[in-house]
Length: 264
Image 1 (tube, rainbow, N blue to C red):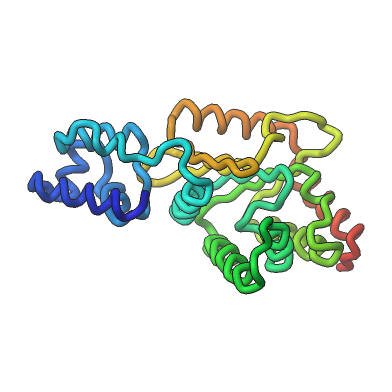
Image 2 (cartoon, helix red, strand yellow):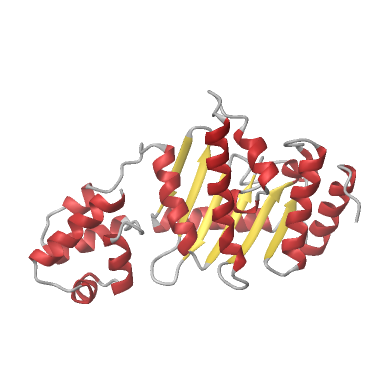
């Protein structure tokens, strides 16, 4: 989507002689939301686009110009990353891997090296740096408020080997000990659970409705439909209700790190 959509919206707004605030008032949105869309930093929901079309008398152009469901995973993921940086609340779930913003350099590099066709060392370096840059949102001690739900499989799979896994797990433990995130583990003994099919990220914002991003192999989708977002939120919280409490999850992570060779 990006700047082309935002540039077109700005052009139509200016042709209508409206300021961002005036358009926001007519479309029942916030001025900052309009500004983010015009700058290419924010993706309007289908309902937002419909109200913008009505406010600007543009038929259904803004609605139909939104990315289609078969947009490439990379494009959808890029949109999700922009939103991740703007969220005030994030709820992550990892079924087989530690979610991106919590990955250590060694863990991230081990994941990148599984790509097929293989990436060059230079490309791996670039992607690892990008992934570590995402983690800077955790440098703020308060915002976003972050919870992580992990399948125990994530802790048991030795991505990168024992040393990398011990470092990765202890990184999560330290984030919990510092009060920066909450990590809850879904024990393997639980069996099937509502989120076992893939990755899920839930996001809440100050000035727009919540959104979600789900991903499987070669498939990624950014969800803005209120009904679907609520459904995914409910699935997350249903799975969370079966997870280990915070302290027990912390004990399990520490014991697993020791199995990989970590010593306090």
